Length: 359
Image (spheres, rainbow, N blue to C red):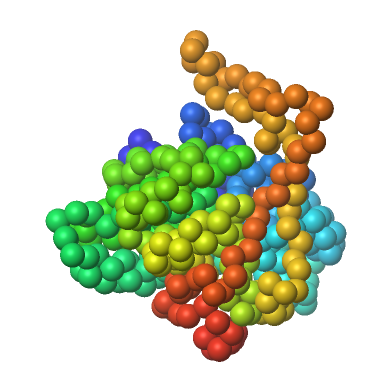
């Protein structure tokens, strides 16, 4: 932005402030928001000012620091409040468990400083991890492109929701793969699902691809099956918020029907994610996990820019219409062609994932 590279979250040491890109304001406004308290960190996660499993985890680690900066005895309460913000993305629990263990024996006079150091280290590690995901995934996409009959045509990639730099500290997961491929000069076109009801594909993925100069087309979610059936897609790749020990992929609502359509049309479907997104305590989709159900207003109301350039919100459906707003679904491992991690591309099954359990 204006010649400066940003992370989605960072610490400003000169002023002792944690800052984020407020994703609730994109794509129409690029705004930086300061998180000064635990309450503000929790609100940022709940209101999806920060979103994406890896970024939620890192934000929680910084939230612990903000709490301990005010009260060195607040570790337990901070972890409890942050854990309650969003139930589905496992990186939140993963980050808080690691943070709590790292601080468990820290003296009160140094616990806040150690919490800050740990959060910064976690942010740096997330960025490096996502870049590695991009490298491994780019090799996969290169092989798919070289296998095309007509290499004069771009590789056609379909993605769902936003799994870019905005969903992590930097690079992203699924979009990291696309960014790395684009940097290598391989011809590429991305089909972007709108991703109702919050439209993260339209608002965030298109914003990232546009700024990166990557050719893309926005489609409504229900058009994905059409472009797949017409042979207009070579590969599908998404992120994930939680993966079972058996390889089942929990991701933004609408991912499961996309994977079904991909399988029916013999198009490979991949999920890209860090090992921290694998929940080894979740044996398979046969064991239910909490699926976040968000407010009805996300479905019934639409916001945008009016003809006068001002922001407007309109009601699309009567208030009397009952609405269920499920935020995630689960794609069974049998529909997943592979999982792209920082350690490489692996099969979506228990045996392959078990080898990563110590990572």
